[in-house]
Image: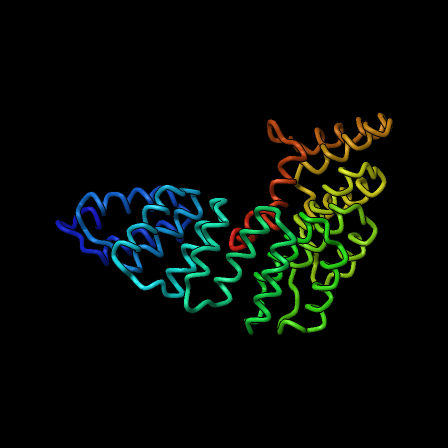
Length: 309
């Protein structure tokens, strides 16, 4: 229908860009934005916010910088929506200092603006600065939300700030921030403890979760077990994954590998024979990396947890 319009106006173009961005088709969103400019249709604020969202998701920093320069040339006021979109774009494209500069020029900020900065610092693995901005946020009277907590726990995980992470998480449990931690927050806490070698504590967090831990949670713990060479706990966690997803051949392959690594060849072969009998086949090229990549959605995707199952 859009392509049948003789001369689409800015609203139609913006609707298309927003639709592509919301569906995760960022390449198409940016291509449509460029088509719009080539058609000499002037973008408005809503267009730019949508395009910046696509730039952030696609790491199209050059287009994002062009948008920023366009906004400045037009003399547009840096309101909270446009400013936050710019901060978010710069942060997710690895240009944290540029995002901070935009932040400093904004007359008004909201929780989303603060989350963008803290999330960017977590992505950059600058946990110390992320925690400083978290303190500034609270001193500024802005109440943290669920995404803030995820970003802060991610920052603590990468910086190895176990005690600080525990304290912040416990405050959330006590209702300090006005909400109760959900499965994503527990996942971040498991990641924090696992990365730091506190595997028993991480296991206790999983066991005491108020909701059923999913495969991603167990995967986070398994990654820590493998990194620390804890074969006993690795086996136990893998068995939980098998119970949770009995039709997933990858878990059986991993269990067989664990047996082989500890010299339990007969058990390793038994798993593979059982898989063959049940008709379970692993995907070509499968490895623990797939499970790790899935787990990373909780920890390093810039706290962009709209992508998390």
